[in-house]
Length: 462
Ligand code: HEM
Image 1: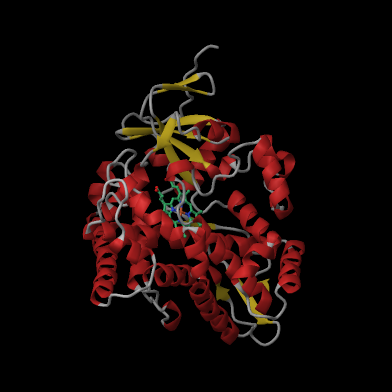
Image 2: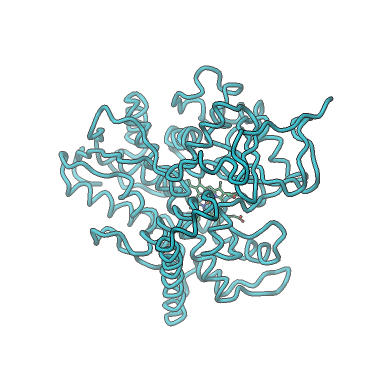
């Protein structure tokens, strides 16, 4: 067929489309452009440009690892200032990635994750106790408590470190530093260089936040070295693991990079998932009732056990459907390994950054028709999910793709399932403001903004 140029969003010379970006919420700008420009288009910023795609068909094509590889996009390039060549921010082909991947992967396999159940349960119990003490009339800012939960859980399970977030009103300085750091990464990646020069104070704070992240990770590492243990966890894998291929171990600097990487990658994403899942459930009473009924049928008022985790298909479907409509990593970036042609007609150069806009491709009307934007967990039950995946491969990509896909998926799944089950088992929930409509807060990941709920105990705590 005939080749075509990728449509371009009109912009200014030099600064391109930068001024049209909403810096507090870059995703909203991408979605706005998508509404106007359709399945594929190019944005220009000073010194760089990016192609965005918004359909399942294009995401599927771009998931072919023989033609495309992960790209460290503009925002991730900024994150690299804090995590260097840690496994999330390593460039494709960068030598440090493969050994670190081989050493770290096994720590997040199914068996180790099941072994983390009791520690996950302990932290979830702290959340439930806190909400029980609030009583039924106190508005709870759900997303903050979910963030305390996911950070504490990850730090405890993977490095035996206690942030004890439920014992302080203020979040740990690490959490504030990380939130501000990630937000600034988003901003720095969109603002023209000239504007950046004006923000001296925010630049200094950015590097100061990085210092706080690194010092916290160094502290965790020092504490473990000072107190050796038999515990098998992520940190012990980092300290003791020898790569079977290269025979190398991780350096201390690389351990710090990867500790920060896991703390960043592993908590905002899962806390956003829980926040969005509660929003969706509370807006759809029939979904909420079905979920609670499932927990009552399977678990009743007995303590939750790791065996229950595989017996809650409806909860699982809710989590999948939540990540479909509200992917907490709403975009990721790939690049062609060689000059290539997209959709049979759009030439792209080797290394061209191409952003997969999951927040659009996962609600593609070509896949879901008129119900694309409705929250319907039933379509994500195993059988239906598999049928959809066959017909529309890669329609659901919230955990990324292939070799560079998420390492922590099983961890996130067990944690989110456990928390959903424990909370539904113990509480009846309602929206604090029944007319609340979803607003989104974005750092690099997304979560609901100003989302308040109420929690009334159903019976004595289980
Ligand atoms: C990679 C999503 C939870 C650790 C990724 C990627 C996505 C993702 C989309 C690929 C990014 C890219 O291509 O640039 C999510 C979501 C989560 C979640 C939606 C929760 C709902 C976790 C958890 C951990 C984790 C709990 C750690 C325990 C990582 C790491 C990578 C990664 C280390 C980089 C892998 C590599 O490049 O080799 N995640 N993630 N994630 N995730 Fe997750």
